[in-house]
Length: 614
Image (cartoon, rainbow, N blue to C red; front, side, top):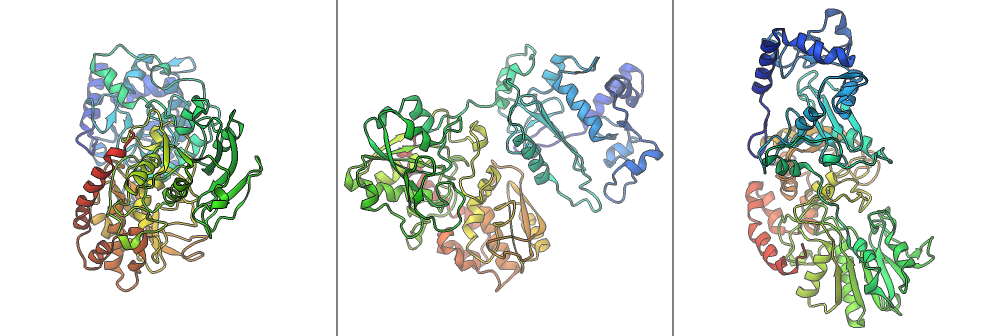
């Protein structure tokens, strides 16, 4: 069951249910389970109270519990058999169990559940509007759903075990992911939540030809429920997919661009829902002449972490003018002969990300030449929340175009274009081709769009969620994971004591995150080839997460734990607030520092309101 904002699990309900089943059947509960479930499904290695001969095959738990003895203390006091714990199994047996659920309660000729029973179990059973959604025993969408990974959709379901076990099942793709670990061995301090998430993401990404079936009712028959259930089920049904600006423009048969000679500012993120590149679509559009391309930071393919050279597109043979490096603004020669510039880039919702500045510089250059500017809008992948200090005037530059903007600005690139044009009085002839289906409260994984790395070190949404806080301090003498497989998911340095840092941060009770100590060796970037101690960051509730606060909590802890070693002043250009850095160095409470941003956040929300499109 779930309770409150955070959610929780109670063993009382499953325990009472097991007792009721045993009384009604007039058999021990373990015998009912064996006869009604295990034997029909052929689960020969699944049982309560395993025999001593099987102990060599059983993983140890916390070092104090003998192998083959249930880890849960309540279940131990109940003799090792309980409705909530005590069942031992193997991956092979669990795979058969998952196949039974995907087949609506049957495996081969054996049926253990009715199809409508499976449907009811995996439909929402929590109150309408509850932030944590569960079925009858199954987790549908809660703070414990990290083992879903980044790709498995709402409509899938699963469960976790305290010792590190988990199952996640997706009826739409017919994928199930089983993870068995003894993360509590030997001292109870292990954490496999990020690993389980990554395994599920890798498994889901490997499915390139899923079955042609819908989520919701097309997966299997649903019961005829009382009135509240359709609303509950809607809470876990995948939202309608989003159409981005290029999808809308394509549906319009490129009418706004008819007869125009066009330059296109884009990169690899500029693509339609079906994967077609915006470059190719405009190049083939009737009565539209695409004559030149512009590339932002990271280049037209989004893979460079250095200055970007001007070059030629291999497919269209069009010139590509770099706007990152020696030239950040388009020159008169680059714009010569154009009627319009189209911009299609995936922003990440953070003030110091450079795509918005490149867009603004293009608008500044286009305005006096009376060139039309079209922005093909895309989602803000981390939603519409606003957080962080306003940018100091002294920090304005390529990583900070607009001084009133908090670090997490909450707008789309199209909305930013409207705001820049209005507040900076650029005078650009601007048209934003808006999206269809996007809302400000939607994260990227709720859009139905394919994640394309907007830059080389933002490889999944999880990293984008943490980027506003960690990226703000990456110019200091810490590694934020560049040069590892998981950039922006951890911080470290050769001079950091990871255990002390994790303990200090966890003691703060920071909403939405937990930390555990680790070591890593970046292959490139800061501390390349050096062993770094630090912490890995686990997001436990992304809706409660305030990533910029996480950043200053880490900075504050490093300043306090390692006096004289943390070069915090180097964060001035990206963090953008000298007052905030001064307060960290003065030992002010990070929560108090974060609270001091409220006026700036409110001012930005008021300022930006008239430019919102969604």
